[in-house]
Image (tube, rainbow, N blue to C red; front, top):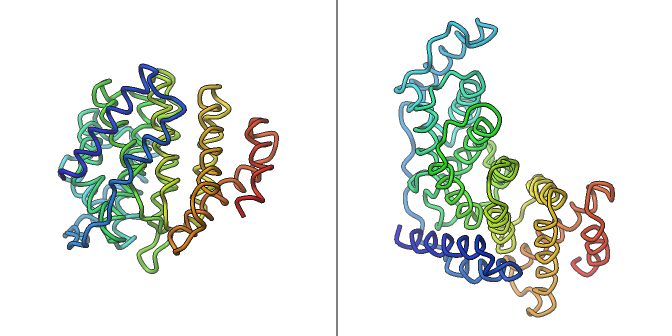
Length: 329
């Protein structure tokens, strides 16, 4: 994890420079230079969760009791043991344990207030831990993507709860969550959407969900929101695998929400789009499959902005993208 810790240290330093206003226009370039350190490592075995059937049976039994109530009133809170079992199954490649099992269960109990604040804090800490959120992240596409992707998805539910219902996280924990997510969205490289019999991975759609929740938190510093947005866009810029199952549209939705929310984000997004075009002007034409995917991912991003329609996109951004789209394709 030395490589991850080194990246985290550099990201925190860039965030601090953003906070004090030392960098703005160059945030994307600075992040890009930092991300050049992200090199593929040899694949290692992924440890998958056991006791899937036992966990699923307990989750189903509890969900049945929940269904028998119109609300969670009168229902016992989820036990720590069952919560731990469910959280572990987010790493299961089989969708009946991970997706319709653990994720559905955790979604239900979070939305129905059936976890204590202490349990919510434990679950948040578990999901953002390096061993979970960054599991095997520097290796070629592997089965750990399910744990990473569904951890960020459940984190989006916890962030929604923090924003709209119960501020169960202290500011210190929330700051750690945001830092971990900013790093994750910049270095995730597994773009797979639906994967055969294992179902959805869809990490980049889930990234959009989590980033959106943080950007909608009114109490956060604009500089921290800007840094998170910049991290997401910097990661997208570096992708050399295709996004073609709706992920780009979700990321564009989040990006345009920011552009409409404040001139600071608007100006940074416009600078970023211009930087992407500059890449194509100053770099040699793509010479390999990864670089072609990189170019077409950007073209999809521009097209998704246009498809949102002139009424939903700031005028300067819409006009720039319209003028540039043909150049990108």
